[in-house]
Image (cartoon, rainbow, N blue to C red; front, side):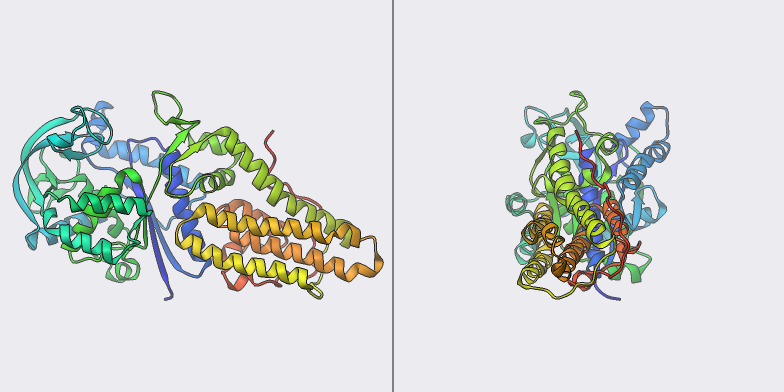
Length: 509
């Protein structure tokens, strides 16, 4: 069956409007999924929507709708955006689907049967927007410590999960799996949180009805985070499709925003341990985006709409900017000036100009047909060495989800090709009839570097890469190429008829 790779995004709340944060996580997951397919993995990529909970119920009632009607209406926003952004997810999970009810109730029953869930009474402060309970000591000025919004005192019968029982086991898991939580700063934060002591967790509610019923007590609804986190195993066939589940689980990477780190690295592995299921291999928490130096907020009217940005600059330009501009894991700032600079400098000047000047010279000096490779000199061998090193560096950087460094590696190859052209000066060689063989080798080497660079670029900018692949006369099979086999130097075909020019990345004035 070959190697497998299972990557997920968080599932997104259906009462949210898709914004840059949703796009960022999903694009990053898509890039990783596409890269792993290129390197020969059997990839499963899951995204979806979180449709249960009190705030969804309240929002629906305020609009005169049933919660499921609201979810059906809003889920379309996410599906359409992922299509626009060229997201290659394998499945889209909705927590209102029957298959998910089955999975959640199954894992809940397992924890109940082994004594990790018990019935009690809960009294504490609850933040509806965050779906989180807080103690009096945790409140900040009487408000939710996460979102700084009002909380309400709740007292109700509740089922509890014995989270306290898993404190030592979680700490041991973190120690034995140092890459489980990334980046390292987030790992330190969670180790500190768990070391301070864990309280048992309320995992059911009786004050609303929109959710999955507790299997042994229909008057209780399962806590929305217990419900939501289970999507990651529902999506790969749990509990009914054992073959699929055993194929893909455990997940290789859960990609999340840093605000939901605790749920994914404390609650989720504990729930799984209780049910006798292996925890995921890695949870990577990325940072948040500000806009022109300000926090994004509806009241400021500065929420970045991915539809507007992609209509203005291009889908692949947006994908490239998000992953090149800031190290994945840190906070980033979106600015239109920075976006324009990236498009004009990296895409139009470096990559686009390399393509155009090469096509132009092949047309002028070789009648528009790709030459044979001829005999390589030390100068070509240095270029080949650069590409081999880049292939190894790219794998290392993608494995660590260092997307900005991966793109720096790819641009190192593109810039090496631009320098190679300047050093070898084909426009001078073209004036000397005795240098025709050397001219052909030089232009072949640049075309071949463009071919390899385009395979490297494909996960990040699939639409543009496919277009360049076709411009280079290589057909429509780019997504079927494999690293490292297809990035060996010397595979560009001879005699391909090439256009004189092609503008893939127009400059933004």
